[in-house]
Length: 115
Image 1 (cartoon, helix red, strand yellow):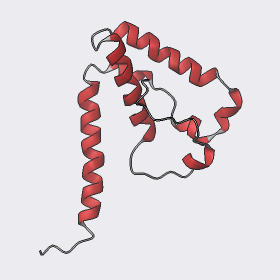
Image 2 (tube, rainbow, N blue to C red):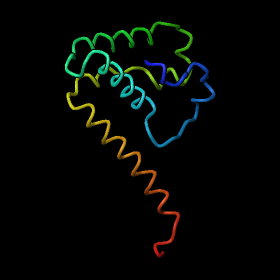
Image 3 (cartoon, helix red, strand yellow):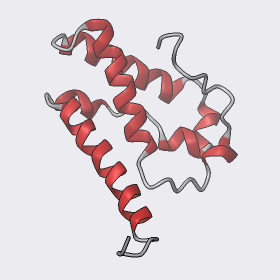
Image 4 (spheres, one colour):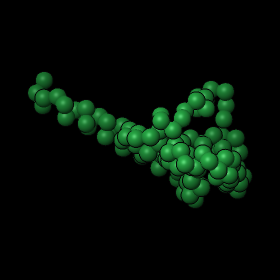
């Protein structure tokens, strides 16, 4: 990923255990990864994107066997099935809308109906 991407190397198991954010961190990570790969290879170059995404899966699965016990490692593994959806970008936008709607709806319930 580019230099404008956040450094996630300092996150540890405690920062991911018991996370209840209302959205799927793994799904967002997968969309981010797929978006980065499609910007590198071009959105229509599915075969190269699939190979690169598969490479990330392999690295994630085998880079350190002992990290598989950490909750963040188990929650955020690459999901190659995103490549199988030609409209993945619209799916991500719909998911983002759902997450935003859920947050706004919950916030609105805390206030009276009258102005």
